[in-house]
Image (cartoon, rainbow over all chains, first blue to last red; front, top):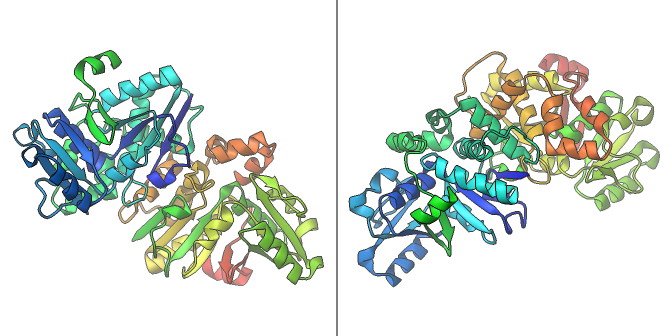
Length: 252
Length: 252
């Protein structure tokens, strides 16, 4: 069995992603916001690295079907339809839409998965669905990789804790710690230390403190709702979308 | 109060080192080996990044007074006098010598401290001495930075745990977690989880496992001896040396 965690995209060794099942985590807030959007009927999310690319891509699509979403330093980008708050992703707003999204850390992490066999998005709100897929990866290939987005390229407590919760879910009671890299061992320690009390590590993290300072405390509360959204989200062909219900059913 | 930990040199933000008191940690094994060498009478250690530079530097010095030490992937470099094992650093071998040393991770971390106000080396064997200096930094400047060497540029459990032990020593009973970055919070969690049982996280770490595989288990046991060596080691003018007893007395 091999379970690796990378605390930031920079923490990935060259080639470490190739052929593996990867779970990308950016709890505050991209993972949470994307799960919310897809759970509420968005057709898909296209993550892009820059504001310019978001604008350019939006122009090539039918403007009535597209929403521009994104943040820089947690604040909505000027001229965009949406920021990066899960609370904005209501059914009334996102249903049937394709969302072009640029976020600071989440997009960067997704881009680092080039070459992976399969990529899923994980957070607290969809922990059970992602955890079931991770358990399947462990059962079938004996392998999984968790890639934390981190914060501006640095270690983030929020994502590290979430990585631990995901591994716990994937282990499904197995207690062996063999085959885990050092980061996975620490993530697991964090998951055990805080238990299912997401609000505690999320609020303690620098990302969480920044959100509180900017008036987004409710986003943290939303992100802390374990299993609030029963969605399995895959990243395929540069697009995030739901694994369809029947397929997800087969997987879960 | 500000307490930051960087889990790897790459984890440092630009300019984060400038003007600060920095503690560099590479428990397995540079911190431990350097403390052992200086405690046993070596005059100083000059860390260099490459084998070539070690050879070149040694040629400019009096060969009778110089020892070449270093490892690549935990194994002694061919033609060198010493590897990177603390057990090699006996008084008979190192007393009065200057050691030119190149190690994979420790040297890289030391080089990343350019611009710091003061740089010290910390490990388990000299925890009390380094911790006292860190406490002083907190008392006087309300600030400290711990830089973990990590393992080949990646997160290392051994160094992260040691960083937590150092912070605990520096806090000297203060319980506030405010002003710590996410990595410092996690390091502290690790220190509390394992307590003073160094052998447990050191053995669980990938660096520790590699050493066991290569037959260096005794080095881990040595590194796990908290406060075995009462030495305060500074890095100044590209040279590691003891803070002299009288000065150290004043500091401690």
